[in-house]
Length: 198
Image (cartoon, rainbow, N blue to C red; front, side, top):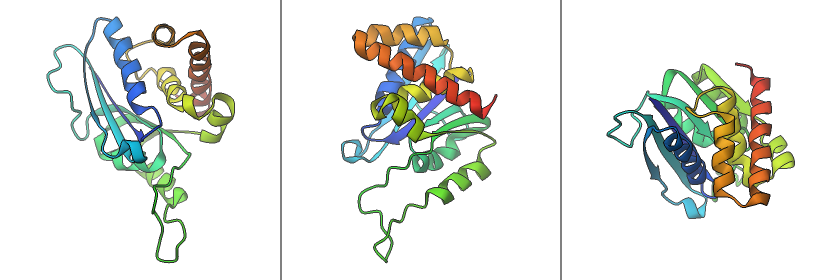
């Protein structure tokens, strides 16, 4: 069984990523259960997608301390999700912060301390891969960030499907132009993950 938690903010493609993973797992004949906690996603709020894959799954929700892998599209959302990760689980996090509206301190300055969030993740997560969000945006565009992070998860072997199987799902879901763009993002994410090491 594989439990994958995907977290981010509205507009980052969290739900799409969970659907791609679920489709690939279904194609392998696995049972798939999932659930989304969307909240204020349309306004840039927190989004959390649970994807459980295996045999005989009854609950769609991942319990605290049991996620095999967490894909965090935004660092602060990754920090919030740490309690879900099992002790030897892997977290892949994009280092590009998206500051919530109105998130300022008493002096009117940004209250989002990205450095502190990253340090918290480094001290709290044993298996952590931090991906360079600017590199992903420059190479793939912000709309393919989610697929690039999927590529990193596939590099680490944390999902039940292979790179080729995920490319097949992408080819079925998107027209030719967007399929090719997302396949390149998948490969680029895997190449960035290689820099984290296994």
